[in-house]
Length: 324
Image 1 (cartoon, rainbow, N blue to C red):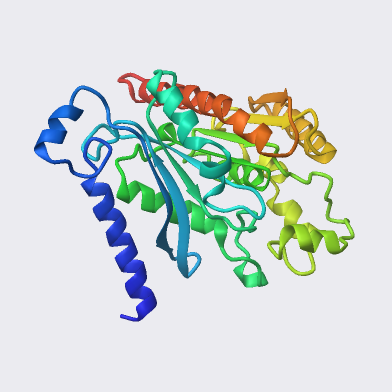
Image 2 (image 1 turned 30 degrees about the horizontal axis):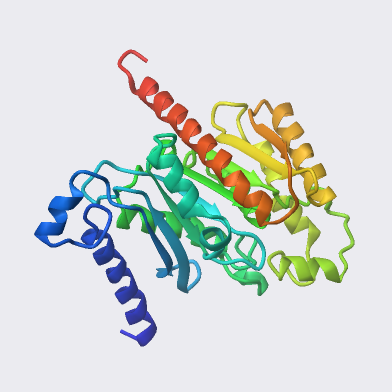
């Protein structure tokens, strides 16, 4: 085994051992301490910058994960939210700037949302598309789905269906979340995009300048290929959706003082969803294209995802009922 393969295997084994060792939400406790913990759930855990071997990337992929209060490996299975960052971000953005642990703890402890695992992968500036063949950042579409999704379903007690899985993101991550959810509606019961960078104004005839190479970092070729970008855009994917029934629940938000292109493109995407018979929520909220807006939107995003997955679970149960 070469050293790189050894690191991948060791990293994944360590991850499995970590998950298996979690008892009452933390490391295994001495008996005296365990007794003291029985009256209240253990606090949440935030694991920063873990890594696992991604076949799509041909190397390790970093991620952070939030484990809810009272997390147990032998408990009922948990819902999972995949939360994507924006350009020039990392797996530490949502924990460090977005207040993930504080917001999720407050909502879960109040009984407002169900305990949920939140996974925050490092997508670099990849636009969450496959670009290795173009000399771009790498095959990050497949690194997220299936690689990250499969790893999380193996390592943690998840609900491995669309009724237990959602995806969301901000800016570039909003683009990626919408794209992955529309490509795989059978896997995601909900999707949320805050300030999504949809670039609807790009057409196959767009003549790119150096700004496009700077923003997209080779994810759609160098020079930037507008035809490839338009084909991959969530707006183009709407044509693949069956009216209404198979679409995930969709939440969109943009700031009153967000970039004008972000606001216009989000409004246009919302209108296209309605024209296609696909339900969605669109919220214009206070804020700019920054963490002031995105961190405040985390609570309504989590509430939306919780309600949407409740509906998806009920629909699944009703569909499986005898006589249907």
